[in-house]
Length: 313
Image 1 (cartoon, rainbow, N blue to C red):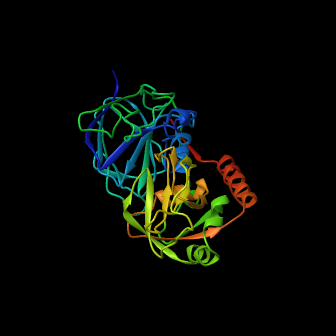
Image 2: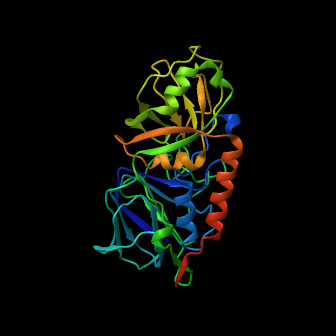
Image 3: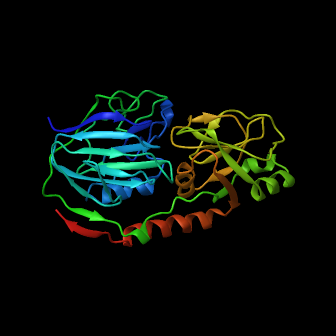
């Protein structure tokens, strides 16, 4: 058996692949990486299939010991990466040897980092995915976050390709961001004043922010109805509960709910929101479905056409 020992699991480290699709009918949510772009880049920089299983590290503090020769890369939030005590570049594949100690420090900007190895970690699938959803107790090694003493199996690799992404292509996880929203049919439950307030105000990310959703604090928004019949909830839906404080629903959200929704954030921006730490501020911008479609197409084309530097084997 080859792989990595978990010496310190960090604050919240979860095994993730691209997500668990097609199971909402039985109440299982999608899961998967909160920052899909950083997730895909982690796999691409190792030549992996883009759905390969890796680690999503929230805030930091992860320490691993290698019992395998392979390649490893870290993308996403600015968590200092050290190999055998020497700080190394992120967004850059590194050759790892048996006995190496890999440390991820605590983030200085952004909230989620992604650690991948060549060909991904070998994790048994549950309902067609390895993604961990702690609320449902499925995926990963035991349905929850990594624990000290866990073992992450992977195959040895000394011949695989390794790449780095130039700094000017790397995302900048800044604070005080504007997030793009498509309004839905329930916007009619909000007055013009409330909608104007929502789209012209700043909201603070509270400490009640997790993989299920981000609770925000700011000017109160009120709907003309207290609730609705429970219905399916899409990724990025912005619920307005009775206290008037928005909740942006993310990957581990419940599959149905009954709060009025003023709109839905596009997935490009849920990734940016998920990189925000408590205390940062966000604002909202209304866009059309056509504009959202164009933004997604452009992001896809940019990812496909951005060529990372091949640094050999």
